[in-house]
Image (spheres, one colour):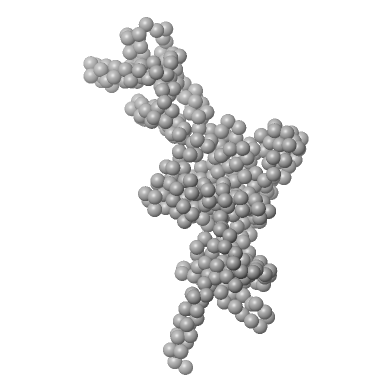
Amino acid sequence: MDNLRKQLGEQFKNRRDDDSFVEQVAQLAKLSGDQVYQSTLSLLTSLDLPPTTSRRYWFEALEHQKLMTRALKRSVTLITAIADYIDKTHVLPFEPHLIDSNAFDKIVSETTKDSLTGLHNRSFFTEVFEQQISISKRYNTELSLLFLDIDNFKEINDIYGHPVGDIILKKIALAINSVKRESDIAVRYGGEEFVLLMPFTNNTNGMKVGERIRKVISETTFAAENHRLSITVSGGLSTFPSNGATTHTLLKIADQALYQAKGAGKNIISHFKPDKRRYMRVKYRNPVIVRELGIDDNTCHYGIGKDICIGGLLFKNEHPFSLGSRIQVHTNVKEDTSLLLIGKVIRVESYEPDHYDIGVSLSFGEMEKIAREEISGLLKTPH
């Protein structure tokens, strides 16, 4: 609800004219009510008036500005009109002065920023998330949401005390800000939870940003009140529209992915994946060669298997394939037995630098189809 205050605060620094400022106040009032008029008149006139009275004075002053403009046949500034209105209409102790832009920005900041970390607060995020979803729907673009949680943060508070915990929260916020892109929106969601909203970002690039944040934090030693602490974070990623079309669904999916990252050992960035395990899995440590299907780039990526079953394969490599992408995997089951597998990426996780776990759901129907096409082409080739 309060996010528009931040937006207007930023616009205020570069406002073009009185009309733009009046519009900013109107938009803020829609979100936060009559206290906006109270704060605005206090800054413009130094008068401390009740909110309802401020609202009435504000609109009467705007009408007075129009009357003065018509009477004088020239434009009249907002401050001049307000000063003249109060001076002529009301018996009040009044001394006009220019607006204190720093004080105005402070009011805006206090309603949109988290006081401890300086990141955006949850109420700001709630409103801007809805707006970004609407933009993504309108322009048919992707948007990714990263839900981050500091691992074992309760233990930090219990062992070292809340002052140390507060320092860690501030430094984690600084780390997130140091990595995020200019278009990304960083939020302290609550407690030790953070959110990064990434407009125009698909799940692959969202995973890369999340991995960079995780890596920076895990490789940093945090100093706090004579203590030096190693901190890690876990994260869950969701993407519009592949994981959902509403803020509620995307938050839920990202939260579930975060829960799975915690359960998998922490210090992990994870996509949500429903547990559809139907087959017995065995460890599989053979090398794999992977190529994405359906694109012009025929680059091969090399990795190592982790486990395999009738329905799928899990391997690790340095390339974060997109969820839903079709890939071809070549591997040797035994020294003399080569295996070509085709499937769809259903899992992407990262918890080491340039290290991604890729889960593939195998498609035997597609493998059979491609095999038939290759054999048919071979039979048609003259020898």
